[in-house]
Length: 112
Image (cartoon, rainbow, N blue to C red; front, side, top):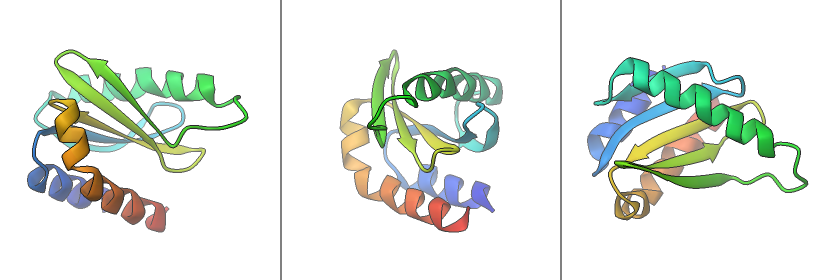
């Protein structure tokens, strides 16, 4: 169910190398991209640690961006239990895909 939506997002978005739908423990629910499967899963596991670390703050961020050569990683909190990671080629690609990522977020949030 999610793979089709993730694939559509990657296919129609300029400069997106991969997208990972992850639970709060870092387990990949689904993922799509030109980056190796293992790499995507490792990214999901490592960055769930970051989100869980800041989970105790009064205000939870809805999104974070981390420069991670050669990518910019966009991290989007969907709920307390789920988040989405997107590997962009540059900050420019994160900006121009803002509308598309919001559509994907709305779709996933509506189905969980």
